[in-house]
Image (cartoon, rainbow, N blue to C red; front, side, top):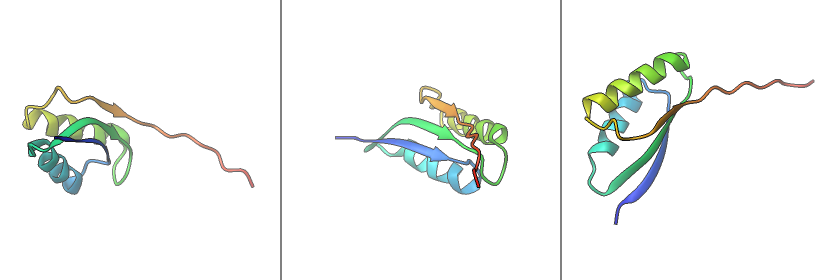
Length: 74
């Protein structure tokens, strides 16, 4: 039975490698990917994630760009 994964990434080199590994495993079902800013802004993260999915020929996997806005109160 496949294990289902929802993967949260800020796709740089390390997350790209992790995604490629997860997408290639026969015992893993990547049900979705959430993209958040990290070392680069969220737009670049989404571009990188799309490129990984295209390279792996897995454009069937759902992915979302997530932007978190919040305020801090003192």
